[in-house]
Amino acid sequence: MDGILGVIFASIVSYLLGSIPFGLLLTKAAGMGDIRSMGSGNIGATNVLRTGNKWLALATLVLDASKGAVAVWFAREYFIEAIVPIAAAAAFFGHLYPIWLNFRGGKGVAVFLGISLAIDPLLGLLCCAIWLLIGVMFRYSSVAALAAATVAPIYAMAVGKLMLAVLFLLLALMIFQRHSSNIRRLLRGEEPKIGQK
Image (cartoon, rainbow, N blue to C red; front, side, top):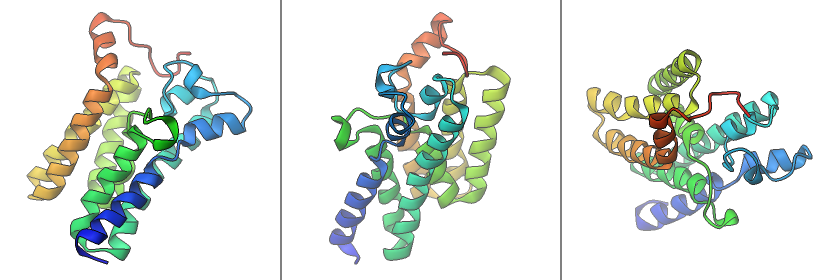
């Protein structure tokens, strides 16, 4: 299925996939209640980590990343390559604005990493390495996320992949927007470090 119908179908499926709130589902299944009432109120892995359950946070990270990776695989398997960035963006958008949670979702970092790994493994590994390195060095999840997001469009442009550069620039801008409160806290010296409840 190609053309406009392919774009619409791939976008809907990818959006619904991206909108699965794994952080919320896992914490509820573990008997921890609603993650949205804890910490920052976010449904992502960083906030799950603030509950003190590292394995649950890791599972959230992996499953959220998988949403982006599966969306890319789905588009490549059943549609033309040009639909891949659209499906990736739809999955990312679904995570940020899930229909099941009144369009109040996560910040998209794990989904972004999953997308980058699936689209270009070298880029994905580079983003993951930067995210881990910055996270370990400075212990600020937001700084690590912003650094990884910044690298992706620069890399795509450097290797001459214009469509991917546009995709990753869009995702990076949305990640920066979702981290606006974190940026303000960083400037005030009030941003909690990784692992702090």
